[in-house]
Length: 90
Image 1 (cartoon, rainbow, N blue to C red):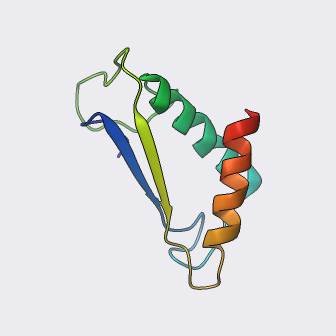
Image 2 (tube, one colour):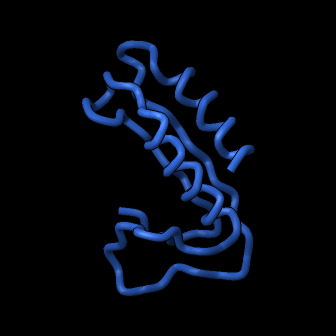
């Protein structure tokens, strides 16, 4: 569910393939980086998985917070650092 219902976005990432235990592939992290940038601009990312009928777009910028909870095999800090790099580059 990727509906925006507030003036900020909070994302919890639990693993790319296996909940809490797998890391994220580079392409998955790049996708999340693109989504984060769209949310921060106040728009809805392309291909968003929306539940409600609303568009969720606004001209107002949003803060975006991402929490990695895939820590069983210590992937979280490495995925967070990679994601931060992609957000800057893309």
